[in-house]
Image (cartoon, rainbow, N blue to C red):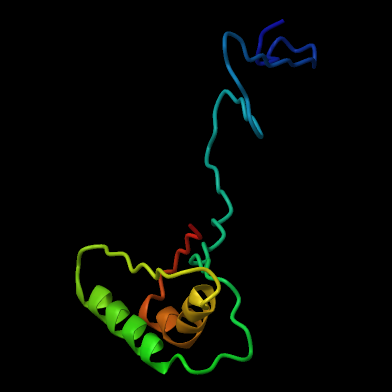
Length: 117
């Protein structure tokens, strides 16, 4: 019997040998006229910032500083980083969450990354 099942006996078999590792579907054929794959799902831009709270007051100066830093980054062709630092419990995470929700999503539509150090 041939590996392509052309001996007229109606039986076919395919084999993958050697050190082959098959992950997902496998197609083995003698001749393929054409193949059409489904379109890839659209990749959503990353938005990794923390969820903002409803109540957030008395940080207009800090929000303006973040906005100015973001505008400077958006105008520069080189990649950049903005770090928000301070002692624990002063509201750094919520400051970033509010800034992302209010303005940074619009300034950076390709996505925002967040690292909690």
